[in-house]
Each structure stands twice: as C-alpha cells, then as structure tokens.
Image (tube, rainbow over all chains, first blue to last red):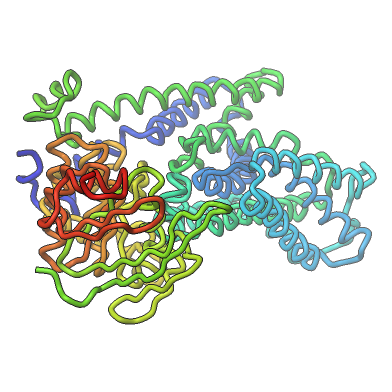
Amino acid sequence: MVGAAVTAPADVTRPLTVILRELLLTRQAAMTVVAIVLFIFFSTQANNFFTLRNLLDILRATAFIGIVAVAWTYVLIAGELDLSVGSAYGLGTILMGWLVVSMALNPWQAAGVVMVYGVLVGLVNGIITVYIGVRAFVVTLGTLSFLRGAAMALSGNFPYSYPRGLESSLFPLGGGSLGVIPAPAVWFLAVLIVGGIVLRHTKFGYWVYATGGNELAAREMGIPTQRIKLAAFMIVGVSCALIAILQVAWLRSATPNTGSGFELQVIGSVLIGGAALTGGDGNVYGTFIGATILGMVTNGLVLLGFPPASGLLASGAIIVVAGIIDVILRRAGGTVRARRGVIDEVSEGDSRVGYDSISKEET
Amino acid sequence: MADVTPVLEARGIVKRFGGVTALRSVDMALYRGEIAALVGDNGAGKSTLLKIFSGVYAPDAGAIHIEGQGARIDSPQRAMQLGISTVFQDLALVNERDVAHNMFLGREPCRFAFFVDRRRMLREARETITALRVDLPTVRAKVEGLSGGQRQAIAVARAWQQGGLITLLDEPTAALGVREAARVTDLMKTLRAENHALLLISHNLESVFGLADRIVVLRHGAKIADLRTSETSQHEVVSLLTSGMTSG
C-alpha cells in the first residue's frame, strides 16, 4: 500500500534533484527568470541602462520601495493589508523637516521621534483593525488620507529644507555609500537578510504564516493571532519611518507629497513576488525580485524613451501577468502533487473516480 | 480496562449564552483507557461541553478536577498544559503549511531561543506518523493536498503527539468514507490502548456502538443517561435522546 514503503530518513534529508525540482516550480523561480530576461533586454536595448551610475540609481530607488515591501510581506502573509504606507512615509519626511527646521531638534533627535511615530502609525492601524475589528482595507484607507492631510497641513504645503551649513552624522546613513553601494541599498540588504531569516526560520515567522493561513486554526492551537497581526502592522510603520529618515538624511529636504503612489509600488512588488493576496503564502525573496522587476521596468522604459507614465502602465501589466502565471503554476503544481501519490485513498473502495484513478496509475 | 479513579471529573457544569441555558448542571467523568461518547440531538449541548473541557468556553458554574486537582481550563493553551488535546470539528489545520508544521502548530520546537528546529520537527512528525501507521508518503506535503481521512488522521496524531492524558474529538468521522473512518477509529483505539481517556462527540450511533465503552446522553442541556455500551442498545439510546425515556 502507498506509504508503507517510504523510509523515514527521506523525509528529513532529500536528494538535491527533488529539492531543485520543487524550487524551480515556484512563482519566485519564474519571476527570477523574468527579472534576468528584463535585465538583459534593457541592457541591450536601452542606452545608458547598463552603466554604473544608472544601476546604482535603480538600486537606490528599489531600496526605498523594497524596505517597506519586505515589511508589507509580513502583513500580507498574516492576512491583512496596509494601504497607508505612502502617506506614512510622506508624513515621516515632513516630520523630519519640521522637527529640525521649526522645532530646532538635531537630526538624530528628529530621527528618534520619527521612529516612534512609525511605531504609533502601526499601532493605530493595528489596533483598529485587529482589536476593534474594522477591516484593514477601510482603516488603512482612512489613515492614508489622514496622514497625507496631516503632512500637507503641517507643512503648509511648502517643502522643508535643512539649512545649508547643517551637518550631522545622520546624513551619511542615508546619503553616503559603502564603496559604490548607496547607503539605502545597504539598509535594504540588511532588511532583506534579517526580514528573510525571521520570516522563514523563527517561531514568529511560522506564526505569521499560520495566522494568515487559517486564523481560527492558529487560535485553536493557542497562537496569539491578534498580537501577531499587530506586530506586523507595527513593522510596516517602522519601515516607513526608516525610509523617511533615510530620504531626508540623503536629500536634506522634505516635500509634502512624497510617497504619493508609493503604496502601489510596494504592493506591486509583493504581489509580483508571489505572495498570495489572501494571506498564508509568500516570502521575502519573492518580494525582493518583485521590487527589482518594478525598479528595472520603471527605469528602463524611461531610458528607452517612453514617457514616465509608462512605468505605471508596465507595472500594472506585470502585476496582472504575474497573477496569471500564478494560476498556471498552481495548476501545474497540483498535477505534480497528484503524481507523487500524496493524494491516496484512491484504491479499493473509495468512491472517487477519474482524476484520482489516473494519478494512481502514474505512481 | 478502564481505571477506577477518573482522570477528569466535572460537577455541576452550567453554561448560558444570553437567555439560553446550554448546559444545566452536568456531571461527567472521564477515565483512562476508556472511550466515552457524548451523544444527543442537535442543541443538546454536546459541543458546548466539549468546548468547556478544551478551554474554548468557560463554564458559568461548576467545578472541574483533573487527576484529583481542581483545575480552571481558561484557554486552549491551558487545556494543553493540563494534558487535554482537542481534535476540533474543523481540525485546526493550516492548508498552506506542511504536515510537520501542522503537527507542531503553536508549539514549534526551537533552537537558540526562537529559531525553529525544522529538522527535529520533520523527524518527530515522521516518527509519530510511522508509529501510528498513518498512511502518508511524506510529512513535507502541504495539508491542502491530502484527503479527508489523512487530514483527520493528522489531527488525531497531533493530539497523541501532544502526549497528554485526555483527547477530545468533535465528530471525528463525520465527513469520512468508510475506509477512512476505520483508519481514524483505529487511531483512537491505539490511544485508548495507551491509557488515554477519550471523549468523542458523534451523531453516528452505529460507529459509537462499535467504538465507545461508555455512552453519555445529553438532552436539552442535561445529562439523562450514563451507560456502559455493553449494557444498552442503539434502540434504547435513540429513545433516550429523542424522548428522554427508555423504550417507550
């Protein structure tokens, strides 16, 4: 009978061929191929795409989106959403401007305050969604509007500029570089590594997947799903604060409509990377590839001579195509599973015909 | 054979939901090495009583003793600590996760404080599956790809693995075909043989008579009978749960 013959060690360690095959049939693998193809395409077709300066620009832009996208991955996997990231980012930059220019704080102090602000934004979004029970879509739509309004009100709709002579050891953290790598990209790398490891290998990460996969089941097994979701919202809030600080450290100025449309790029990155909109599935690597694809496309199309809006068009198209690829892969994955005999109960007596009896023959 | 002293004893359990009294002063005991079945018509209070034992509900009145000690089962977590495992009707499985994680849901083994020890999880899940002779090619399979019987078996295996004294099962074979149901009942018999106390809720009197040592009948929130299976009949039980009287 199926199952009796499988040896125990095969479950714990597996042959490389099995691991590779399973890895390659994923959305993330498909998207990696897409990213490589796009890279080659733009490098060969667009002038100045494959120059150090341009690649570093792409890297920097992708880093800002990517840092928040990694955090957003946690929220989506946990089964929630946060539409307010662009506004949280924008208000964060305005706060950095206001605190230094109007309140005479030094940049480090301002950064500290903005970090706390980030936690608070996450807390508010989280508490209203998780504990009061308003849908995340509604809550974060509200905060999206509220925070943007706050940014405009606080700044009087004027930009802030740091005084010319102002120096601070904070500035290189956003504007400096490690060798040729711009600082934001270094931060992005750190966030990718830490975020990836925590999500995949820690108990907290496992609980995020469980909470999003089946909240009732998780709760029945004693997982504090509400706290998990709240933590995810707070992680997103902090990530927005972080990029706000890095941005102002780099540019030494802040404008009230920073971050408009940013949420689309963040969400796009996460979805292209293969995270399920319904929660319970996805990973940080996928988000990284998604952000990279969006970054390259936005940049590359401009270099090819298309109007800047094409970036938006292309991003939209890629998100939909990625969704279609997802459906195709899910169906292919289902067939592979059936062949491996995981769906048993096919034999002797159970009343399921057709599909299952076919898979039985192939085992 | 069942032990003489109960592993769980509940006295005077009352539960109300708003204006409705779901349980009226129910007394009940569970013994190690015994399978008890809780039967009753819809609305009799079976699920409510089971949920009180599994920590999902708190009783409005009454006392519970586990192994002679007074206990307050405040939460599912607390129930597990007290040695009570529950196989919920919805099975409490996360489809997108593999069997190994599902077997350790909420109590994932860790190394270095918070890093999940995946190797240990895989190994122990595989050992449990093998020991209970559950038909599963790999514990790396995502639960969503498994049949109803396999899923149920995993939920019961998880309860066994939790290593407690008492296992509660809410309609464990309701949605299963004959062969699959037989596998699950085999698992329950294995648990009984290992001196667990089991309490199951079931609508299916035929399977109850084939499996349970004792039958407790609830009707409109009250316990009206507590019978050894060998001393009663399906006919009598049906009579009790519909009309409250024996063979009328």
